[in-house]
Image (tube, rainbow, N blue to C red; front, side, top):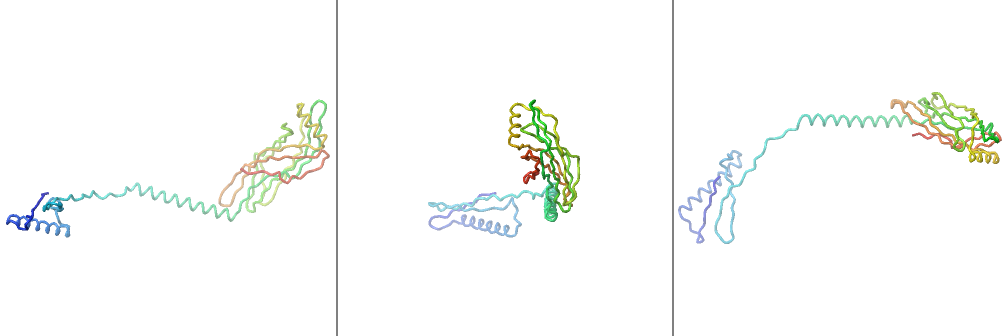
Length: 263
């Protein structure tokens, strides 16, 4: 690249040598403009001119301008395209699966089966001078399945009956099925062995006898499984925590809020 310059005299007159230089610069400038428009200029011979003027001098300078060099065109790696395509298919599959599950739920409207204590009564509650307690009660628990299009299975059923923190008996049930939109009652005639009580527990037993009412607690779990159409099998734990206030005259009670909660 070549730096060219010419100088104007302050009186406006130019020498013959200056005139020749001026003509050569004009031809170079015209040639550069023509090459830029046609795209045929050679990078090694193209000249860019820049005029720098000063305030107090009549000097003009033609300076070369660098031309940007473009690198080779980059192409996307095929592996990236494969990963992007795979992610697209996975996203579509998740969306379609979610829509199918939602539509199936709206059509089937599944309901979680539950266990409920429907009745209970005390057959015997005795406490002797030796601080021994004997309890005999009858409890009926209902296994309910309110699903109109699926039967339910109940298994791992075990409940504990306690008196003031003292275990009275375990209530168990073998695995069983309940047809759709129906219920199955479980009858538990519970009779404890002789239970030795501490003085504090004995005072609670004597108080129950005086008030002619005993408070028992029934706690435990069962598992349930049922099939919801094409969605598949659904499993839940059902937890029961129930307080039974039983009269000692043999009357039967019908608890209203003694049902399992799913988790």
